[in-house]
Length: 120
Image 1 (tube, rainbow, N blue to C red):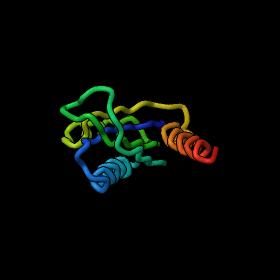
Image 2 (tube, helix red, strand yellow; image 1 turned 45 degrees about the vertical axis):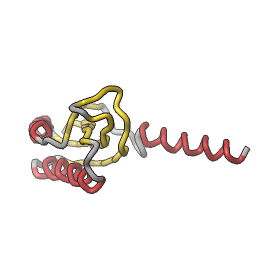
Image 3 (cartoon, rainbow, N blue to C red; image 1 turned 90 degrees about the vertical axis):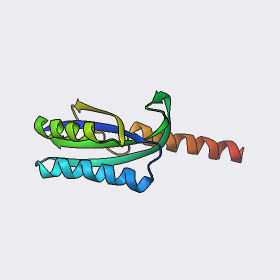
Image 4 (cartoon, rainbow, N blue to C red; image 1 turned 180 degrees about the vertical axis):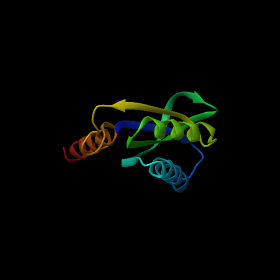
């Protein structure tokens, strides 16, 4: 089986529960076709570099997937027809990162820096 990272951007007007439901639906699609989602990370609502379909922000979600290529094709097909998803990208990787992704570590690093500045 191949390893993939699937990232999608959901519309800014969705609630966190709706974004979690989108991630759960993607996980269901993968698992129904004998794949496996090894990690799901919600990066939160972030500003976009430019407007996409009148959205200035989007909810970012990462899924680490261990599945054959046909599963990814079906996941992308389902994602493409979902109106709540404004962009998505799936890439094949050699191995998944252990622990939190770079985006999650960035938040921790910023938080630690703020704490240090407050104590100085």
